[in-house]
Length: 210
Image (cartoon, rainbow, N blue to C red; front, side, top):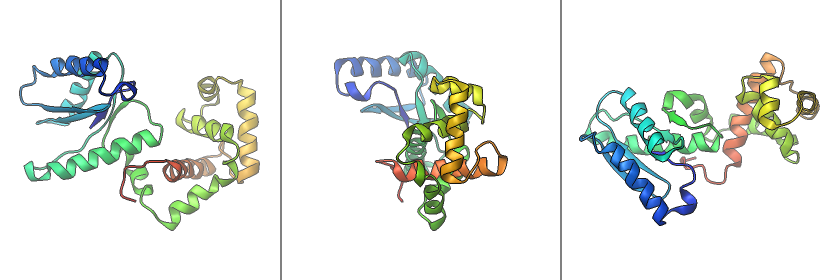
Protein backbone atom coordinates (compact mmCIF):
# COMPACT_ATOMS: atom_id res chain seq x y z
CA UNK A 1 0.00 0.00 0.00
CA UNK A 2 1.56 3.33 -1.02
CA UNK A 3 0.71 7.02 -1.21
CA UNK A 4 2.17 9.53 -3.64
CA UNK A 5 2.60 13.08 -2.31
CA UNK A 6 0.68 15.78 -4.12
CA UNK A 7 -1.76 13.44 -5.84
CA UNK A 8 -4.72 13.61 -3.44
CA UNK A 9 -5.62 17.17 -4.34
CA UNK A 10 -5.65 16.21 -8.01
CA UNK A 11 -7.24 12.77 -7.56
CA UNK A 12 -9.32 11.89 -10.61
CA UNK A 13 -7.79 14.69 -12.64
CA UNK A 14 -6.00 14.26 -15.94
CA UNK A 15 -2.69 14.97 -14.22
CA UNK A 16 -3.28 12.18 -11.70
CA UNK A 17 -4.28 9.78 -14.47
CA UNK A 18 -1.13 10.57 -16.43
CA UNK A 19 0.99 10.09 -13.33
CA UNK A 20 -0.48 6.66 -12.67
CA UNK A 21 0.11 5.71 -16.30
CA UNK A 22 3.74 6.73 -15.95
CA UNK A 23 4.08 4.67 -12.78
CA UNK A 24 2.41 1.69 -14.44
CA UNK A 25 4.85 1.89 -17.34
CA UNK A 26 7.69 1.54 -14.86
CA UNK A 27 6.10 -1.58 -13.45
CA UNK A 28 5.18 -3.20 -16.77
CA UNK A 29 8.56 -4.93 -17.02
CA UNK A 30 7.69 -6.82 -13.82
CA UNK A 31 5.22 -9.27 -15.33
CA UNK A 32 4.43 -10.99 -12.02
CA UNK A 33 3.61 -7.79 -10.13
CA UNK A 34 -0.04 -6.75 -9.83
CA UNK A 35 -0.80 -3.07 -9.29
CA UNK A 36 -4.01 -1.19 -8.67
CA UNK A 37 -4.32 2.58 -8.30
CA UNK A 38 -6.84 4.65 -6.38
CA UNK A 39 -7.07 8.22 -5.16
CA UNK A 40 -3.54 9.21 -4.04
CA UNK A 41 -1.76 5.87 -4.32
CA UNK A 42 -2.32 2.21 -4.84
CA UNK A 43 -1.61 -1.39 -3.92
CA UNK A 44 1.18 -3.65 -5.16
CA UNK A 45 1.11 -7.42 -4.94
CA UNK A 46 4.76 -8.46 -5.12
CA UNK A 47 5.91 -12.09 -5.22
CA UNK A 48 9.39 -12.79 -3.93
CA UNK A 49 11.73 -11.46 -1.23
CA UNK A 50 11.00 -8.41 0.87
CA UNK A 51 13.93 -6.53 -0.70
CA UNK A 52 12.03 -6.47 -3.97
CA UNK A 53 9.38 -4.22 -2.47
CA UNK A 54 11.94 -1.49 -1.84
CA UNK A 55 13.28 -1.81 -5.37
CA UNK A 56 9.82 -1.41 -6.89
CA UNK A 57 9.01 1.57 -4.70
CA UNK A 58 12.25 3.12 -5.91
CA UNK A 59 11.00 2.84 -9.48
CA UNK A 60 7.73 4.45 -8.49
CA UNK A 61 9.65 7.32 -6.90
CA UNK A 62 11.55 7.81 -10.15
CA UNK A 63 8.37 7.80 -12.22
CA UNK A 64 6.57 10.21 -9.87
CA UNK A 65 9.67 12.38 -9.38
CA UNK A 66 8.93 12.42 -5.67
CA UNK A 67 9.27 10.03 -2.76
CA UNK A 68 6.28 7.94 -1.77
CA UNK A 69 5.36 6.49 1.60
CA UNK A 70 4.39 2.83 1.80
CA UNK A 71 3.25 0.22 4.29
CA UNK A 72 4.28 -3.37 3.57
CA UNK A 73 3.31 -6.78 4.90
CA UNK A 74 4.03 -10.37 3.89
CA UNK A 75 1.41 -13.05 3.20
CA UNK A 76 2.42 -16.70 3.74
CA UNK A 77 0.07 -17.81 0.94
CA UNK A 78 -2.82 -16.57 -1.19
CA UNK A 79 -5.30 -16.90 1.66
CA UNK A 80 -3.20 -14.50 3.75
CA UNK A 81 -3.32 -11.66 1.21
CA UNK A 82 -6.39 -9.87 2.66
CA UNK A 83 -4.87 -9.82 6.16
CA UNK A 84 -1.53 -8.63 4.76
CA UNK A 85 -3.32 -5.83 2.89
CA UNK A 86 -5.05 -4.74 6.10
CA UNK A 87 -1.77 -4.77 8.00
CA UNK A 88 0.02 -2.79 5.30
CA UNK A 89 -2.79 -0.21 5.28
CA UNK A 90 -2.62 0.18 9.07
CA UNK A 91 1.16 0.56 9.00
CA UNK A 92 1.01 3.20 6.26
CA UNK A 93 -1.65 5.18 8.10
CA UNK A 94 0.30 4.94 11.34
CA UNK A 95 3.53 6.14 9.68
CA UNK A 96 1.75 9.14 8.18
CA UNK A 97 -0.08 10.02 11.40
CA UNK A 98 3.24 9.93 13.22
CA UNK A 99 4.78 12.31 10.68
CA UNK A 100 7.34 9.78 9.47
CA UNK A 101 9.17 10.61 6.28
CA UNK A 102 8.86 8.87 2.92
CA UNK A 103 9.98 5.24 2.70
CA UNK A 104 8.77 1.67 3.07
CA UNK A 105 7.60 0.66 6.54
CA UNK A 106 7.09 -2.89 7.81
CA UNK A 107 5.54 -3.85 11.13
CA UNK A 108 9.01 -4.36 12.63
CA UNK A 109 9.83 -0.72 11.85
CA UNK A 110 6.88 0.56 13.87
CA UNK A 111 6.27 -2.30 16.30
CA UNK A 112 6.39 -0.14 19.43
CA UNK A 113 4.26 2.55 17.83
CA UNK A 114 1.80 -0.05 16.56
CA UNK A 115 1.43 -1.44 20.05
CA UNK A 116 0.88 2.04 21.46
CA UNK A 117 -1.85 2.56 18.89
CA UNK A 118 -4.00 0.06 20.76
CA UNK A 119 -6.16 1.75 23.41
CA UNK A 120 -5.02 1.20 26.98
CA UNK A 121 -4.60 3.09 30.26
CA UNK A 122 -0.85 3.22 29.54
CA UNK A 123 -1.38 4.97 26.22
CA UNK A 124 -3.71 7.49 27.82
CA UNK A 125 -1.22 8.12 30.61
CA UNK A 126 1.60 8.68 28.14
CA UNK A 127 -0.43 11.06 25.98
CA UNK A 128 -1.41 13.01 29.10
CA UNK A 129 2.25 13.82 29.75
CA UNK A 130 2.03 16.29 26.87
CA UNK A 131 -1.36 17.68 27.91
CA UNK A 132 0.26 20.87 29.28
CA UNK A 133 1.66 21.54 25.80
CA UNK A 134 -1.65 21.37 23.92
CA UNK A 135 -2.04 25.14 24.00
CA UNK A 136 1.54 25.57 22.81
CA UNK A 137 1.86 23.95 19.35
CA UNK A 138 5.32 25.47 18.85
CA UNK A 139 6.53 23.49 21.86
CA UNK A 140 5.00 20.28 20.48
CA UNK A 141 6.78 20.84 17.17
CA UNK A 142 10.04 21.64 18.95
CA UNK A 143 9.85 18.40 20.90
CA UNK A 144 8.88 16.37 17.82
CA UNK A 145 11.77 17.80 15.82
CA UNK A 146 14.22 17.22 18.66
CA UNK A 147 13.14 13.58 18.88
CA UNK A 148 13.08 12.89 15.13
CA UNK A 149 16.55 14.36 14.63
CA UNK A 150 18.02 12.03 17.23
CA UNK A 151 18.09 14.63 20.02
CA UNK A 152 20.46 16.81 17.98
CA UNK A 153 19.88 20.45 18.89
CA UNK A 154 21.60 21.83 15.82
CA UNK A 155 19.69 19.62 13.39
CA UNK A 156 16.40 20.22 15.16
CA UNK A 157 16.90 23.99 15.10
CA UNK A 158 17.65 23.88 11.37
CA UNK A 159 14.56 21.74 10.72
CA UNK A 160 12.42 24.23 12.64
CA UNK A 161 14.16 27.22 11.04
CA UNK A 162 14.90 28.75 14.42
CA UNK A 163 18.06 29.68 16.32
CA UNK A 164 19.62 26.97 18.47
CA UNK A 165 19.20 29.17 21.55
CA UNK A 166 15.48 29.45 20.78
CA UNK A 167 15.24 25.66 20.71
CA UNK A 168 17.09 25.45 24.02
CA UNK A 169 14.59 27.89 25.52
CA UNK A 170 11.66 25.85 24.20
CA UNK A 171 13.09 22.63 25.60
CA UNK A 172 13.36 24.40 28.93
CA UNK A 173 9.71 25.40 28.72
CA UNK A 174 8.79 21.80 27.96
CA UNK A 175 10.69 20.69 31.06
CA UNK A 176 8.89 23.30 33.18
CA UNK A 177 5.44 22.39 31.89
CA UNK A 178 5.74 18.60 31.81
CA UNK A 179 8.36 17.87 34.44
CA UNK A 180 10.41 15.89 31.89
CA UNK A 181 13.79 16.97 30.50
CA UNK A 182 14.22 15.97 26.85
CA UNK A 183 18.00 16.28 27.18
CA UNK A 184 18.21 13.50 29.79
CA UNK A 185 18.15 9.91 28.42
CA UNK A 186 15.51 8.50 30.79
CA UNK A 187 13.19 11.49 30.35
CA UNK A 188 13.84 11.55 26.60
CA UNK A 189 12.61 7.96 26.23
CA UNK A 190 9.48 8.81 28.18
CA UNK A 191 8.83 11.91 26.08
CA UNK A 192 9.37 9.99 22.85
CA UNK A 193 6.76 7.44 23.90
CA UNK A 194 4.47 10.27 25.01
CA UNK A 195 4.85 11.96 21.62
CA UNK A 196 3.86 8.75 19.85
CA UNK A 197 0.81 8.32 22.08
CA UNK A 198 -0.10 11.99 21.68
CA UNK A 199 0.09 11.90 17.88
CA UNK A 200 -1.97 8.72 17.75
CA UNK A 201 -4.71 9.97 20.07
CA UNK A 202 -4.94 13.39 18.39
CA UNK A 203 -4.92 12.13 14.81
CA UNK A 204 -8.24 12.81 13.12
CA UNK A 205 -8.23 9.56 11.18
CA UNK A 206 -6.00 6.82 12.50
CA UNK A 207 -7.10 4.04 10.16
CA UNK A 208 -6.37 1.37 12.78
CA UNK A 209 -9.01 -0.54 14.70
CA UNK A 210 -8.63 1.15 18.10
